[in-house]
Amino acid sequence: MSKLSVRSQPIAIRDVTKTYGSFNALENVTLDIAAGEFLTLLGPSGSGKTTLLMVLAGFTRATSGHVLVGSQDMTRVPPHKRDFGMVFQNYALFPHMNVFGNVAYPLRLRRVSRSEIDTRVARALDLVQLSHLAERPIDALSGGQRQRIALARAIVFEPRVLLMDEPLSALDKNLREQMQIEIRNLHENLGITTVYVTHDQREALTMSDQVVVIDAGRISQKGAPREIYERPANAFVADFIGESTLLPVQAGADGFAFGGRALRATVAPPGGLFLVARPEKMELHRTDMDPAYNLFEGTLHQLVYQGETVLAQVALPEGQTISMRLTSRREVMAALPEPGKPITLALHPEDTVIVPERGQ
Amino acid sequence: MLNRPASDTQITHARRLWLYAVAVLVMAFLILPTFVVIPMSFSDSRFLRFPPQGFSLRWYESYLTSPEWMQATWVSLKVAVLTTLLATPLGIAASYGLHVSRVPFSRVLTIALISPLIIPIIILGVGIFYLYVRLGVVNTIPGLVMAHTILAIPFVVVTVSSGLQQYDSNQELAARNLGASRWTAFRTITLPQIRGSIVAGGLFAFITSFDEVVIALFISGGQNTTLTRRMFTGLRDEIDPTIAAISSLLIVLSVIMLLILVLSNRQK
Image (cartoon, rainbow over all chains, first blue to last red; front, side, top):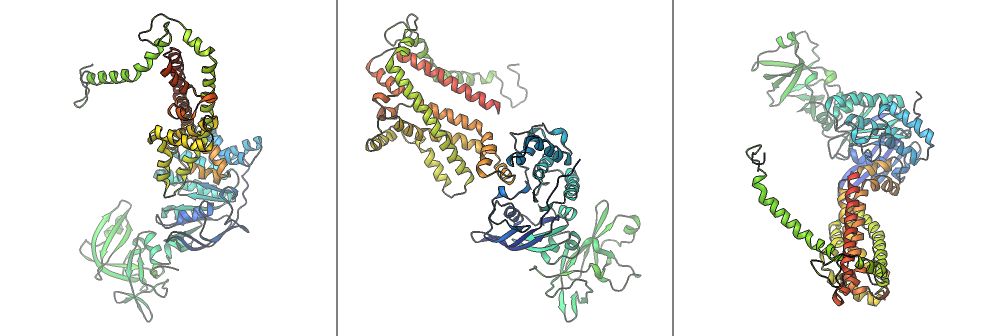
């Protein structure tokens, strides 16, 4: 099987602002997406991530700013001349055509010859492993199959960019995880620049080369999944991604302190306000530990057994409750004190991250 | 089985008999007047009379051989076809525009478009007559077509809007993304999917025009007298069973139209 050839191109978003009346859906968004990159726009609903995707697709015209693909300014190019493939949240397949008709649609518009259409549709259906369904009507397909046909239709014309708007949100959990891997593999095969929108942080972390966290129309942080998770740039990202308790810290002459105790932190930006306390980064303190660990003394409030893990909730004398997640292995559980007894948690300086309120 | 309920709350057919009886009476009341005409049309008598006496096809013959009746029929058909051709695209455009746009006045516009359904036709007729006198289009085909189009548009708007409501307009975005211009996206994706409601709207437009008599009384005459207008005046001047024959043919035509509608919806 020959591969679909794809011209992967970089995208440059320059100072894009979109206002609806007095509401700023996007505010001075500037973003570079490398050629062939899988970039995810992640944010809560109403954060502007879908608006940004619609600006990229050309359905929404930015109030100001520019979108460039390769060296071409796309800002005023209408959607049908952009040559971007897009997968919609509800797939938007055409129910009055069968699978073949749907996938052939963009090729027919491009006046591709009939024999060429046949080979290219076959190739695209092959890529999503549904060649045997070419003659099926759309209403005879399952959710997962529709998803794949929508994907095949979006790539069959070898678009310059692939846009995906929460394409997996309608699928059940198992199928969603399977499709995440498939989309990722497909991306690796094609090497097409992909912009993916989701509100599911796990999906974003699993699939992307780069994650852009959007909050209230602004880019809060951009980075590789690991960077986003381990080194959140501000309280919003720390809170939105993963479980965390934000502990207010005091700024001193030589760094930050919590509860009167100086913190050894890898990330301690000026203007830092909170320590990001993630449950799985916490350890039960042992006497043989490196003295560099930051310690949190408190009372074990309760133990929540969750199957593979157990969550220890610790009440701090400062008033907050922080959590520690441990595997439910026998010796780990045995080392824990009884609820109501004192407990000391330890956090490695490498995992000690202090964040300001909001970034940029 | 008639008397044994399947559950405590089920009402048996026996206990519902009164309802069926009422339903039958209502249906009879609605349909019978229509069917009184058909036997009369085969009557032998020189006057409209019920029950009919004797059997003959002479009134059908009289209709089909009369130049006046034939001319009126052609006028009506011409006007109805032209009205359909005008009202259907306009109605589609209007309902599509109202569907996709988010203008604050769209509700007001919808009501304005549908208002000919609500305004008494006689008032519309008077208004149109005075306007047409000034424009010099009384007793002309274009005048009739314009007036009937106003009456027919609401039917197209109502049916097409309901069709659009069941249609996922994201498909049009998808088509545009895949390389279709707005017009191509509408033509290849939206249009085929609302075809059923367009056919329905078109048939309604045709029947609205073909059956219309009030406005025709004001603005059709001479060469361009419509069939319904001629029937109406005929009914007043001479009580001639030819009218019963024409009515019967019109009933058949309406039934055929209705069948087309039902069949075209079933295909979907």
